[in-house]
Image 1 (tube, rainbow, N blue to C red):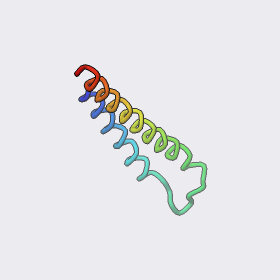
Image 2 (spheres, rainbow, N blue to C red; image 1 turned 120 degrees about the horizontal axis):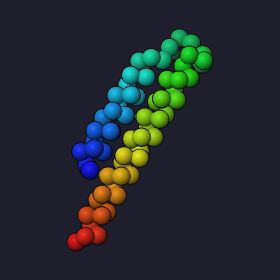
Image 3 (tube, one colour; image 1 turned 120 degrees about the vertical axis):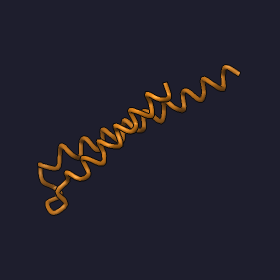
Image 4 (cartoon, rainbow, N blue to C red; image 1 turned 180 degrees about the horizontal axis):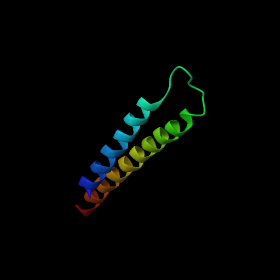
Amino acid sequence: MKILIYFISVIALSIIVFNLTEINFKDFLSNDNLNSGVMILAGFSCLIIMRIMLLNEKIKKIKKK
């Protein structure tokens, strides 16, 4: 399960980095940047969920002992 969590985290990071390169900083508030902004937020939320899942795995490991 850990390998899957790390794999999804790497994909989320790559989505964040890709969409950061797609933002037009000269016209920051344009509608073209809306999709990139939403995808960046989605990538960050995915990273948070994966972190919660890792903590859940650690808690399960501690409870078994």
